[in-house]
Length: 307
Length: 294
Image 1 (spheres, helix red, strand yellow):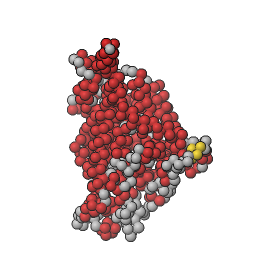
Image 2: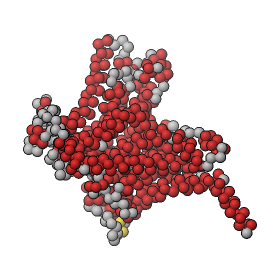
Image 3: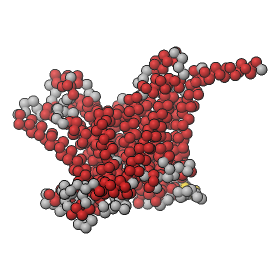
Image 4: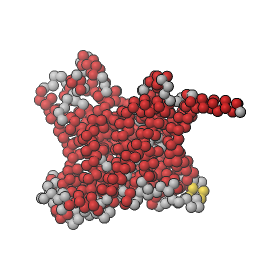
């Protein structure tokens, strides 16, 4: 009896004490996050690996084990991996985007009137709804037919210069450039803000020292500004590569992936949800995941070396 | 101090001895470049605004740059009433409020435990959260879909809400990084005063995390308000439309009626514009601090 009471008291003490509290708080605080993480990330991730070796539909009725067949299909049937070639457009687009953003950020950090206005206008598209942006660009590149539509914005501008209208969204090759343009339009504001933040975090003392040493503007940029923002540029570049590998929204809404504008992610979603080939879709998702892991690994290695 | 704001100047790119005329040329080029860039941003938007104020016939016949003869607001009325935009805005707001609240509570709690308690278990959890952040979210949906379906959450507003709360690992990372810079001595002194751990979290950590919470809120707002595929995939019925999907369905029945689509676009952009104008400065700084920590 007395032993029992004593035990109870120690349990209570343990709960009140800080070690006990630590464990209980840990369990209580992490309960919901871990349940959600398990449900929506861990289980799907494990399923993805399993499904990629199966032939199964959306509901998972009678899944069949087919070994590596999905991967074989993926790497032999050109309809799947060929969608990666469209990512190259976005990849080059992101270089242009970064260079342009760096130039704009540099100008906005110099003595300039209406700097905030320029910055605000250039940044705002980043805040805008992706569907709205996509619809705006559908109209922007539209080719008028005179019955249901007048010429779109870009063709109207061309007409001002006496040029003929162009079928922007149905000419192979050109259409991807248009989509990349829309993508740059939407995301460049973010890069500009990041670069401005990085440039402004450079201590003014460094500039004064450089001034005393008689550095000119170009030298200042090359020896002070650029080294200080190099890590940000590298980070944005990695994000750009990852972004290019997983482009989805803009081509999906503007062209629906038609006219050879499909990307790997659109193909994945279509395979899984339109053609109901969940196994093959999972295999595609695994391939994308591996690519992203490799890029991240390279990024980690490079950053570590520099440190 | 005001001088320090301008870190360097394009005009200095030329050598000190350059004649004044060249410097002026540089100034002109600088502004011209910015103006052209801004025009590229503004022109597509202006077209939408003009178009949304035109009648259907006027839209077909007139040049895109032509001002509407008489501004029409009937397109807005149509978009509002038939286009489901009002419901979309309402649903988006509910989803936004609940998910933001949920993310902040669970995110800060997770960060507190994981960053402050140096146990084997919390270390493992932290590592898992960091690794999981790498998974590409869109293609994950291939298998997340089965789970949502099994839980009976398909076509239910709870699905995106739970997913926004449960898969926001970036928010947890931001909170953890922020906590790294808050001294543990504050916690310790509170504990000496007899505070329990939940109490330390509530009275000390949570108030201290306010700047990080602001960062997460900004990122969350931009992310959720603009998210398209989660709603498209999990809530196909019109009664569950959010802003993005409501706008997307315009393309079908109104395929040829661009003036109504335009009105829908403008209605969608207005809340973003208001928030942007009101919080401009903090949005910039929050986005910068949020992504540097990524």
